[in-house]
Image (cartoon, rainbow, N blue to C red; front, side, top):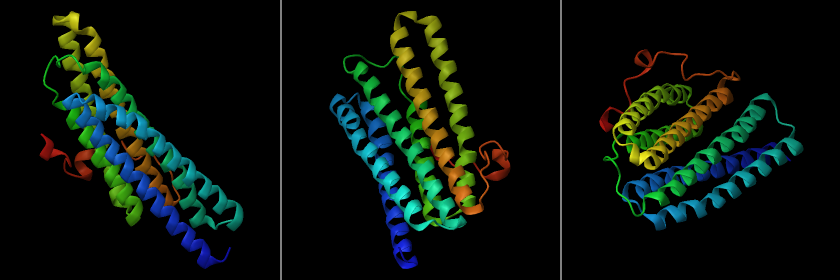
Length: 234
């Protein structure tokens, strides 16, 4: 494979990763819509579409392995390909959590929420924005943007703690709603894990640029790094 052919293959790899990232972002949007509107049909669609994202992951993985085997890439290119392999794993897991939430959404089809959903949809939007920024940082090879994604994880964690406290309080006063409370707590945890996976993507983007893989999420105090990127959701 010539260098020209290799560069062309790398561009195709980028294109496929961006396409997968777009599908995953859409899965998050659809998931929270299905939940808040208790849309059973949409939830079932999300669960079925998870197979499409799985196929994308496998296709990109094969592309990466082929490039490594045929080209024996230099250090910079190898970092990029290695990062892609890691990123698609995190994207696939985000999609898995969307499917998990969609499955739990089926439990709400014939019942009202014990309280209006405010913080959980906000968490999901944060996770979606983090995923979007993480993919954008990969496209632009933007180390600063990757760091911002990682720092944003603190805000999602704070909301998750608030959701846990609220649900625990409801459980004390209305134990008859224990099943729904557990479902909502699991949904919040799935979303918190989505944000963790978006953070992982940011860290792998940073690795592809610098060659150093560091846990950036808590390395810098969030207030010193950036203003709350989600303040418009409050």
